Amino acid sequence: MSEIPFKNPGWAGNTGEFDLTEEQVRGDDLVGKRPVDGGHPSGAASYPYMVADRNPDATLFEGPYRERFEKILSRYPDKQAALLPTLGLAQEIRGHVSPESMDRVAELLELSPAYVRGVATFYTMYNKQAVGRHLIQVCTNVSCNLCGADEVLEAFLRYNDVEPGETTEDGNFTVIEAECLAACGFPTCVQINSRYYENVTPTDVPGIIEALRSGKAGER
Ligand code: FES
Image 1 (cartoon, rainbow, N blue to C red):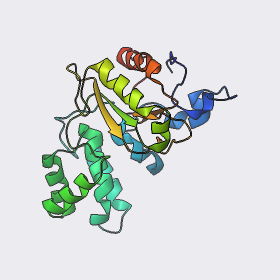
Image 2: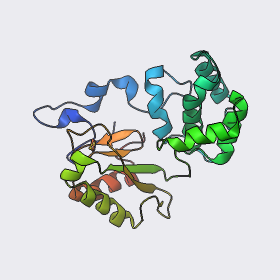
Image 3: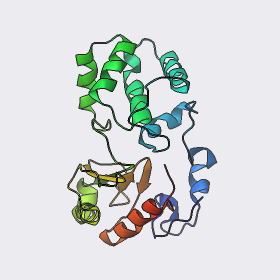
Image 4: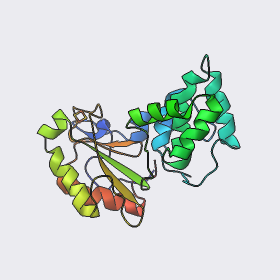
């Protein structure tokens, strides 16, 4: 795995008195590319945020992804119950869930397009428009806010010269504000694709962006 050239590598193990590698903390299975066959169900929720092979023009639910869709269906009592993971799979393939993707999901699950749109637009975790290769979500909720999250958000926006929700011209970065990411003990928490960066301060921002740009922070 690449070496991360800044203080907080994105997991809690290297804070405090610990000195652990990411593999030791998370285990080898959860580090690296997402498995096309879906792997263990417990990992599936993070795949829609991984970047490998993401393609906004890809055909939905074909080939191995058709098998994934069938696998998802087999875990639920009826098609309607499979809606959330199916939307997740659409986002995993294309990086976002467009109105066209929602219609395709509705067709496959024999639901009305309005029902699928109602569900997809309720959840902020589904990207409704295309995002950059790295989706940067800065938590500005209470704990992070008290520890300077607004300045961290501002630093990401200014360093990339974008407004919230905008993507940089090179298509690399989209910066958005997020509600609590459930890492309140490590403020400010920033989720970039499927990975958490914790205890982030404004001065960490250039190092994180450049590590991502150069590939040193890995692709997840
Ligand atoms: S308030 Fe930021 S992770 Fe909970």
